[in-house]
Amino acid sequence: MRASLLQIAVDPDETPNTRRDRVSSLVAEQRGVAELVVLPELWPVGAFAYESFEAEAEPLAGPTHEAMAKAAAAAAVWLHAGSIVERAPDGSLYNTSLVFSPSGDLVSSYRKIHRFGFDQGEAVMMGAGDTLVTVPVPGLPLGVATCYDLRFPELFRGLVDAGALAFAVPAGWPARRREHWTLLARARAVENQAYVLACGTAGTHAGVPQAGHSIVVDPWGEVLAEAGDAEETLTVELDPALVATTRDRFPALKDRLLGLPRPGGA
Ligand SMILES: O=C(O)CCC(=O)C(=O)O
Image (tube, rainbow, N blue to C red; front, top):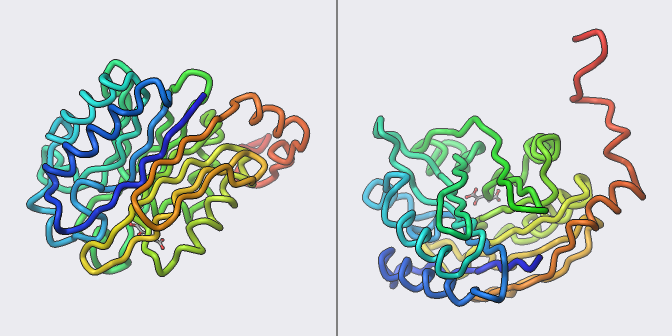
C-alpha cells in the first residue's frame, strides 16, 4: 500500500477558503499515486490561530468536510483529512479529525483527547474527546491520534488493543520542539511495533514557526521518509505484513504485564 503525507504550509497570507481549494487540488493529484493520504492538524485555520477558532469553526458537515469528501472521491483514496475546529450542536468547540473512504463517505471522526495549551488555547477553548478511534482501512487498520496526543503512550496502546497496525497523527507541531516530534514518532512506532504516519504543517501562523519534518516510521523504528521545513509531499510504500512479522519475531507486546485485565479481577 502506498501512502502520501501532504505537509501543508499554513501561513496567514492565505485564507481558509483559498487553502481548502489548494489542498483539494493537491489531494486530487494523488489519484493513482497513493491509496492512503494524510493531511495535518487544523490546516484550514492554523493550530495556533486561537483568535480565529470561533470565526472559522464549522459543523462536522461543513466546508472542509464538503471539499475533502470531493477530493477523496476525485483521488479515489482513503483520506485522513487532518482536523477542523468543529462546532458541536451544543455550541462547544472540538479539534476533530475527519476520515473519508475512496468514495468520499465520512467513515470516522475523532475528537482530540489531549488538548494542548495547559491553561490557554485549545486546552480552554475546546472540549476533550473521550473515544479511541480506529479506521477500517483494508489491510491496514489505522489508529488515529492528533498532535499533543503523541505524548501519551497509553492512547496508542489502546489503539493497538483495538487492532491498529498503523497510526495516523496529524499535527501542527511547533519548530521549537521538533526533536520531540521525531523522537516521539519513532518511540510510538517501536513500542507498538506499528507504522507511524505523522503529518505536520510548514509555514508560520500566529507567530509560531511550524516544525515541518513530517515523518513515516516503520514497525522496527526505521525512518522511511522525513520531510524538510517547507511544504512537501512524502510518498512511501507500506507493507502491512511487516507489522505481523515484527510482532512475531520480537514478541514484546505479548510480555505486557500492566494495564491488561487480570485473571480474578482487580
Ligand atoms: O506537544 C507539543 O510539543 C506540541 C503539541 C501541539 O502543538 C498541539 O497539540 O497542537
